[in-house]
Length: 245
Image (cartoon, rainbow, N blue to C red; front, side, top):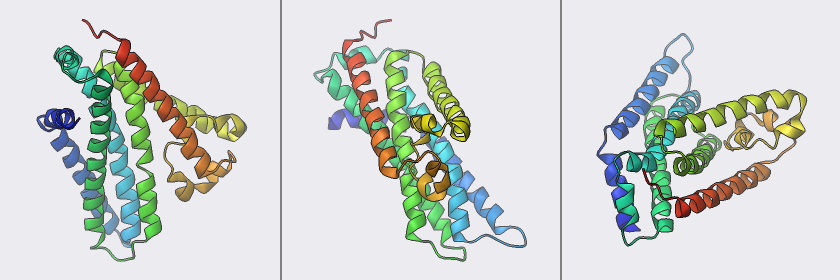
């Protein structure tokens, strides 16, 4: 497993995309910093962290979809997956290494966002509370969910573009429909899993989830069920598919 993970990280580091991603996060955070500090009533540290992490996490979600989609898509594109499948490692272990690598890569970027954001936040007035830090940590749940979803699409479709498109479309359409249903049919809306993936919403916009009469434990369990289902489907397809051109 260690060599498989090292191989995944090597392929990730050898591209320019990680540098682009980290540079994008840094640029967004710096831009937010100067916006918050400007004006007649400069914002405090808490305001800066809220806006900076919200903006950076949006791009983290996008880069997570791209990086995860490419883990299998690029193997097919460069015809290296067949050689990997002929290695001594089982298909289950190969798939698990890609999943673990995707999670670790996402978490590395998340920690980078936290470090840069809080580094700038210490230069602003106002206190940074544990409650706010908790909300930022809970927001990473949406990234974990999207990795399992993207990986599932990756073993079904050959094209990286199609995988990215399906993942983004599923997220956008489901969230949009769910937002509309909350106003008229909250009992139906609560079964749309995309409305539950970001657990920080329970503390940032509690009224939104109260409309559906659900708790954070319901959302966490409901998302977990989907994650397990996605992985079972992914593992089944990955075991049985030939991946032949």
